[in-house]
Length: 456
Ligand SMILES: Cc1cc2nc3c(=O)[nH]c(=O)nc-3n(C[C@H](O)[C@H](O)[C@H](O)COP(=O)(O)OP(=O)(O)OC[C@H]3O[C@@H](n4cnc5c(N)ncnc54)[C@H](O)[C@@H]3O)c2cc1C
Ligand SMILES: NC(=O)c1ccc[n+]([C@@H]2O[C@H](COP(=O)([O-])OP(=O)(O)OC[C@H]3O[C@@H](n4cnc5c(N)ncnc54)[C@H](O)[C@@H]3O)[C@@H](O)[C@H]2O)c1
Image 1 (cartoon, rainbow, N blue to C red):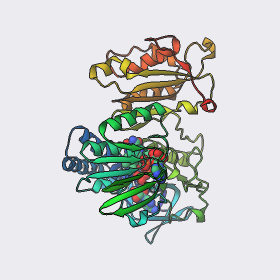
Image 2: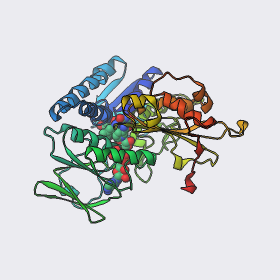
Image 3: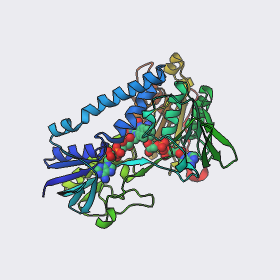
Image 4: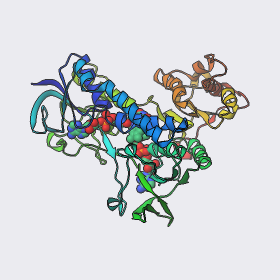
């Protein structure tokens, strides 16, 4: 054998897997076709968050894009080939194909390894729109390469990419419209957050077309024209397609070695990140499990530790992993949303930021804290039980969400959060104020029964 571990893909999942292998004393080869750092560093989190911060600070398009390039380069330098080699990770650049359960082919070179981790990520979905193949369009793989700001930008898809980039581009002076097939922006988050975000977008001049499924697109007179089911037409100088991601499994040779994929093409794994083929695991976006960088890191580590350890292998559990949409205000969530609560004894505490002193002092009162808690039979359900989920919409929601995430991770009762004295006047005090609602009226508000799925 050439190596103990072969890792295919140098994004967040692959980097974490390779490091976990070295930490466990294994000899590791990381094979990557794209740049080390993957989507997050080059076309995802890093450029998008830099653009968002620059736009919020009032930068021009040119300044914002120059900051994007500098930041990507700075972060890429922390995980380049020389850094990885110093950490004991061998790196081979090229496109990998799995030949058998212990052999891969990298552009004609054969390499053998005892275990393989597939971490090849995902790319933007190309939707089946009539005329799209003949129309120039941007995706997240090209939008950060723009050298001139478009006068106007139509964004297909009002998910995380669509909403974050819509606001950032609008703030640097681009006329933005979003076309979203579902009846609201960010269909996966609590509806209260979608509704507030739509109001904010309206005030900031972003045109939102919800319940609008585009079926045809045309390039006409220097404009891209989207035709929507309702008969409506949306046109703009440029089009950004942001309707989700599909897994990178083409040409990997999965069928031949017995690695199953699901109906959308994502690699099927068990909770130890093992695929249906012995000795082959998978991690990150290619599994479709929780398409975020921090989860990709977690999956990469679990995949390797479980593969190398026979007794009590670790599992990947996404229950208490938070996610954040970096709009202003941010929308952060962990656990379930109200419509997915299964227990009809669950209750909901809701606190608008207009009742949170720090938000009032900052004059940033658009937003809320929503906490879902299970029952607490020992207190005859008069107190709150364990935290089932939380959604926070606030300037710093991405920081606030970790308190409920920790509560979920440690199976803490809401009473602990309510009893923990929070400093005045912090944004986090909103968490304590909201949990107090599970124990009686607080500030005139009391937790109400949740509406489980069937009742909505
Ligand atoms: C615009 C945008 C913003 C985002 N913002 C956030 C955010 O704020 N926070 C967050 O948590 N997540 C964010 N995400 C999601 C995050 O970027 C991804 O979840 C994460 O990067 C996935 O990592 P990965 O390792 O699974 O895949 P990738 O990073 O895609 O890495 C896969 C690597 O495998 C390589 N590869 C593919 N096929 C082969 C092959 N056959 N042989 C060898 N190599 C191969 C690819 O070239 C690539 O380098 C964002 C995504 C986008 C698009
Ligand atoms: N802050 C973050 O963590 C962050 C930021 C950006 C992206 N991401 C990740 O990147 C991935 C891609 O994001 P995304 O926004 O492209 O996908 P998404 O799945 O989040 O949203 C896609 C949206 O497009 C809509 N849509 C699909 N087909 C359509 C059509 N034909 N017409 C109109 N609307 C249509 C969907 O209803 C959905 O709301 C996601 O997995 C996301 O988690 C994460």
